[in-house]
Image 1 (cartoon, rainbow, N blue to C red):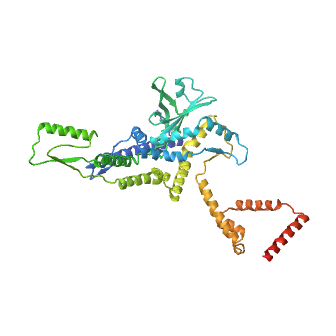
Image 2: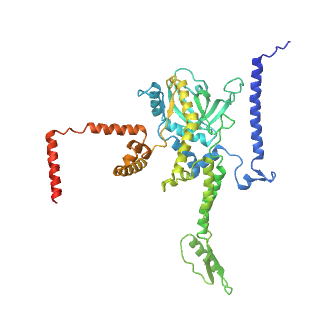
Image 3: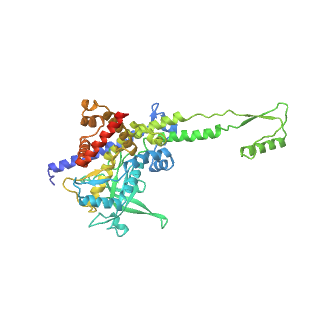
Length: 479
């Protein structure tokens, strides 16, 4: 049988597939090499992780147990998320005052489905593992077998359910190299708790019913880096220091006593038993005095060290890795005002997190999926923008301080007769009080309005005022 000459299209498809396979092979090789070389020293004779007691492999349960029980681990996850989702996220399609259908529908959906809570929860679950998902509970699911079917027909959204990597495992991948979703999940195996029955059931769910969310990705598009992974060793060190220092104080603050028996004294068995009973009662706070013949007691020296410097080093390393300022991480701004630099860095960190992750990986994909499913109306030609609450807006205290400073400067300016000749009022408002042109225009407009609204004085009223002024002047001259 004569073979046909391959076409350009066939050759291009073959080369594309080979490139994809080579890429996957490279990833696998790198992962294997990294595991072989990880934490080796002295020519491979020593494994640092084993020597220091760090686990070689970490799972979702390791990260979750840290988050669930360790204070700093919870702060690393929760504080950026709380700051990111503070306030409501709004959609803007037009600068006009009239709301568009998409803007109205988004506000209703945001409230009805409690999207702020959903986004916050899925953000936490995503950071604890390599990915998280948002499961769409749609009206076309009538029985359990419907979950594995692709979405069809006009739908309504019944509920949303944030799930973690632990409960939403990828069941099947797209293996067709010509498919645009090649290498992405085709279906998920999801464990759903049923509290009424006291157990769980497993659902096979089609990818169209899921929003797959990943953070801190490298080569993989479906798995990211857990947020506690890079600081896990430091969290263990911190636990040893804090827990060890408490144990050290517990034992070192009350180190015990040393008993010395006189060289000429011989202790009977009854005396020994009596002494043991007294010591037991002393240790259990049943007595505070020991009475015994021929034995003297000396308190052992206390051995309590300050762990503060060691704990501070671990916190600095965690802060450097996560990007969270140490004051924010440990919450010291509650007892003392954090520096402006810390606040500025923190606001910049949160703003970047909103733009680079929350918007691009959660909110926009969610909105686009809702539009695709008909849960939200289509956007206009110009598209939509997301509006977040202003992180850099002044607080009430900051506004009051600025107002006080401006009032003092304005008072000094008004009381100096040469000030207006040296610096015109508009220049003073702009360069010294820091007002923009719009604010200056509003002040000027208000000033002109006040002048126009001044009451008109009649000639008779003016004559009375002139007479009173003349009489007051004569009284002053007489005195």
